Each structure stands twice: as C-alpha cells, then as structure tokens.
Image (cartoon, rainbow, N blue to C red; front, side):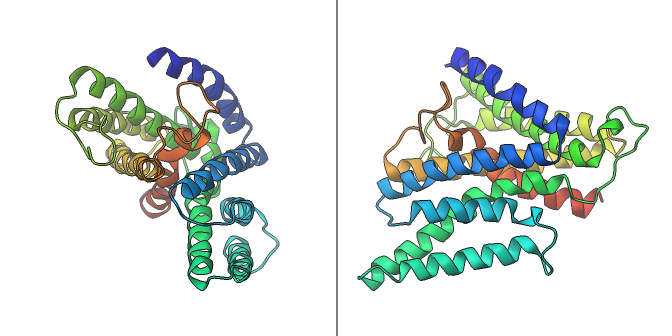
Length: 276
C-alpha cells in the first residue's frame, strides 16, 4: 500500500507543482480536469447508491461552479450567475422524468453532486483572495496568487500523510468506524500535529504570524478529515471501496481530491478573514 502511494505521488505531484509554479490558467486547467474526472466518479457512486441523476449535465454544472468566477466580464458575480443558470437547466431537465418523485430526486442529486465536486474551485479562488504576503519573506517571491495555493497543498498533504503513517503504526482507537473502519484517533492526532507544524512554518515563511499558521493548519486538517470522511460515506452508501481505478494505490480522482473539497473553501475563508 505504501509503495503504491509513493508511486502515485511520484506521478501526480510533479505536474501539480508545475501548474502551481506557472499559476493562472494552468491551475484553472488542472482543476477543471480534476473536476471532470471526480464528477464522473461521484455521479457513478450516486447511481450505485440508488440516487437518480443526470451525470453529464451534473459534470458540466460542476465545472461551472468550480471555474465560473474566471469569467470576469460578467457583472454581478459571474460564478454565481453561471451556477444559477446551470441549476435552472438541471431543474428543467428533471421535469422530463414521468414520476415527479424521481424528477425531484434527480434534480436534488444532480445539483448536490455538482456543488459537491465544484468545491474544488476554491483552489483557484485562493489565487485571487486579495490576501498579501511579505515580498521580503522566504517564500514571498511566490506572490499571493501562488503562495496560498502552495500552503493549502502542503498542509493537506501533511495531514493525509501523517494521519496515515501514525494510524498505521500507533492506531488503536477507532475514529468514525461506522464510516471508515481504518481511521483511528491516533492517526487523526498525528495528522493534526503535522498540519499545525507545517502551517506554522509555511505561513511564517510568507511573512505572516506563525501562530496564525498554526490555526491555519489545524482548521485545514479538520476540514480535510471531514472531506475524506464525507467521500467515504458516499462510497459506503454505494458499496464501493474506491471511487475508481484511475490512480494505482489511490483509486479514482475523487479519492485523491476528497480532502481538498472541504479544505479549499475553509482555506479561502481563513485567508480572506484572518490573513487579508
């Protein structure tokens, strides 16, 4: 298992870091691809769990939710406007179902799936958070558009990695066993500690208070764990062990980005509220 994880990381991490390095449209393009793949898997799981939906339209709506704010020319908030139009289309499509109960379920499930996967768009929104970094700091040369995305990635990776390693070696007490039997309290604590330390270091390296970095790490770790468990709940409802077979050792794309679905909007809120 650990060897598969390392092999997958060796394949996935370099292009991700290159996209962050290049910034701008490269990050948006990478997020868009991830949203499409994760969306297909999410709707497949929802179907297996017995929830009717319109997967193709749902994936399109997920991309709109994730990247709609990139269309700056539209007044009044392009992301919200485009998402609203997408939801109108989903609701209209659901009207074609002959059974009103099935139509309502289709409307609700398609909208939920799109909004859920579309949360990944907050990775892109972090680049336009308006929060500054100290240009003279260790990592200040990255600029705020790339620095906060890198901070998000490092903190979530730290939590996922050390929660897994700590749980594997020291795990004794189950955590949320009804959703994910492999999770342990010790693993969660190990991940929290690692995230707090990485958050403190990376935020301090951007010229901001290290104590704010500890808070950044802790809230992102909690959100990442919730995101992982939320996807586990979806898989358990569908009777599936993994969301797909795209990535050796990690299952599908949704398995790889589940932590970020919850951590990214929390990171955005934290940065614009406390680190602006």
